[in-house]
Amino acid sequence: MAIKTENEQGAIVMSSSVIAKIAGTATSRCYGVVGMAYKNKSDGLASLLKGDSITKGISVTTDDNKISIALHIIVEYGVNIKVICDSIINNVRYSVESMTGFKVGHVVVNIDGIRVDN
Image 1 (cartoon, rainbow, N blue to C red):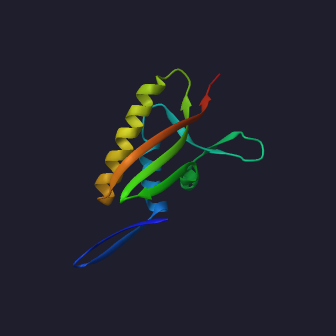
Image 2: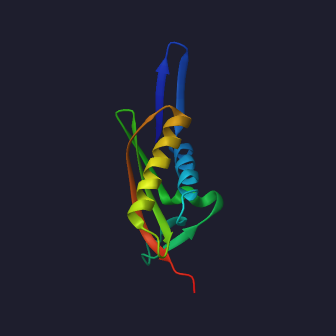
Image 3: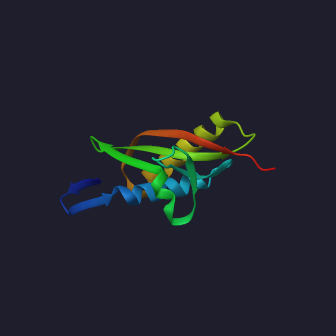
């Protein structure tokens, strides 16, 4: 799925993978985030994604020229999850809106795991 805007000078079409990459990069830079998560459909376990595969843990949809983003993340043990989620929502909204010029309607953060270091 892509989002498109037109004016008298032409059109801009942006794929959802570009928006997912922006959102993934903004999310991974937030304190307390270990990485993006991807749930395996066969066993239901979440896997930690790093590098170029971070977009697998993100779904992007558009409705009435507003972008909705759902993130699946793994967080570090001992951090305040509400504070992390608020930070992620603000950072993703700001990054996507400032880089694309499109409005973000919703950002949903799903915590799929907690990393505990021994």
